[in-house]
Image 1 (spheres, rainbow, N blue to C red):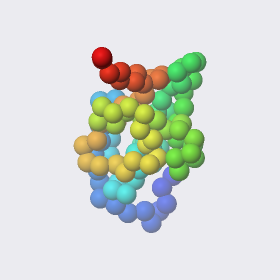
Image 2: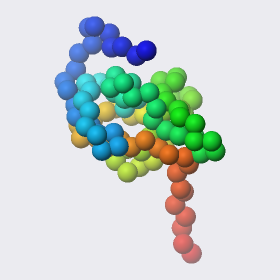
Image 3: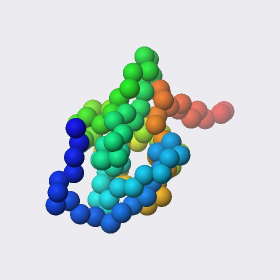
Image 4: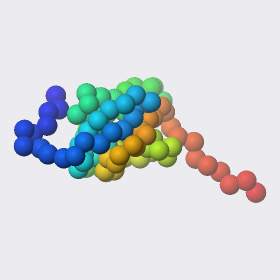
Length: 101
């Protein structure tokens, strides 16, 4: 479904998804890097656990939420990929930190 344009260029960048190594190109967003690597699912919905993946690629739909370097609820389509990035599939809703009084 997703293919790079033949003229696309960029330096290789290494990243991990759920601990597995992958490579993409500089200039890719996290979502584009996942799609280029053949990854179609990046999260599971909180209620049913249904798989979701990048859809709009412009920050409107929130289907590409992932955990990046330990920070959850990041929109992969809006985050530029960087060398060594640790990306994790997001399972359900992320817990909101509560302040203890």
